[in-house]
Length: 256
Image 1 (cartoon, rainbow, N blue to C red):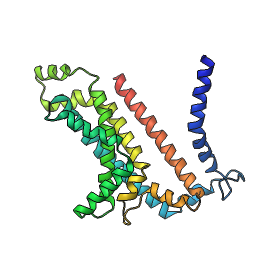
Image 2: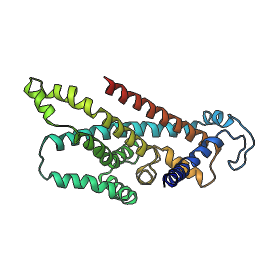
Image 3: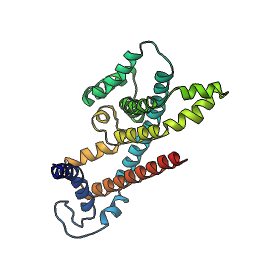
Image 4: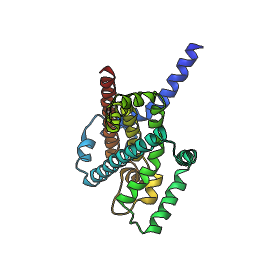
């Protein structure tokens, strides 16, 4: 039975990671077409950094992901604190509204946001993308942070206040360190969601601000260029570095 479980887990991991391994492998392929292996080469990484259009779109996506993840994390943290520390009117309804966004199809969300932006006269571009990405990232960030807040005793904050700490000191010296792992996890989750979103971005993006997922989607219809494999490999490396740094940061804080 144990061997069967190991085979099952191994099959799942292979199914998840073999396509990623193939993508990284073919980013070093000398051939122009990814299906033919003609030897090891770094030429596609060199051509990637010479492709100004693709680099510009990548920087657009990175800036959008960083800004939307940061704002989503801040808004979600404030919401979680309000729900946790205060009894708000219609609190169950507000939570249900947030959770409903998790179940809403991206297609519905994208069309709804498009109609809203057209109704208020907002030009489609960076601002519309930022608002849209914050909208679908907040529920995920809120769940991550709220789960962390529910795991510690709120009497710790009350004890700090009784001992003479101000509200600001209570939040900055007690609550924030406790929430730091959840805030970091929420930020990384929002960053990932923003970076790979296609459907919502398709509806709310404009010609003035192009993002990487839509760029790759348009390129796939005519065949994936090897530069895309190189770019995706670099993004994967960046993700692994972020995971490593976050893991070190969380562990160092726990040791202290």
